[in-house]
Length: 171
Image (cartoon, rainbow, N blue to C red; front, side, top):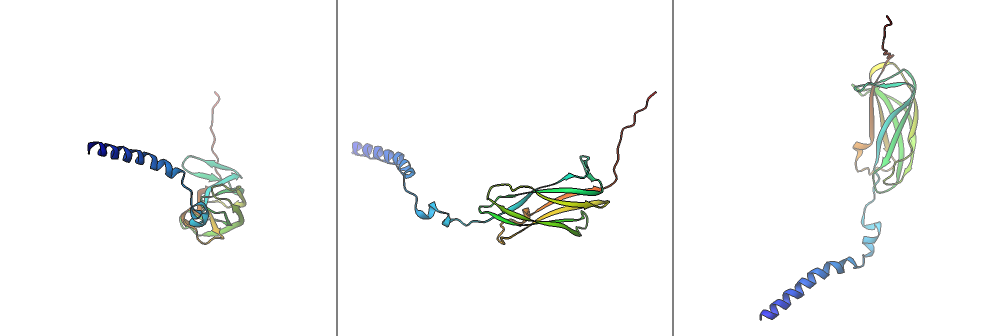
């Protein structure tokens, strides 16, 4: 009886060791191998809003822009599982009240899942004033956006005539 118990334990240990190895070579069913079992969604997000020309200073606590024409560059990526495009709308307004006007809009070409699209460029004429905001918002062709909170990029700044210099004296 002791011998039968030892054989049973040895056979059980062998089976427990071999079974996981055998499962690695088991065929995958057609539904699991295809994309039919998963839902595909697109999720475009605004990664960055950058003022690339026209004169700006980052003081460390504020961004100060010169009045006049600026180039705004917006980077968008697709963190979803299917390609998607849409429209990018750029608004300028107050960082306090949020009210403002549409600066312009550009079409977003289809972006493959897991990639970053080429930066979108919009020219904008800055008027003088404190506490301003540029808001870049994605309007997707696809209405099933799983995370609408990442569809906006915000840049707060002031538009001022800002001059700072160092004065040295010659004695």
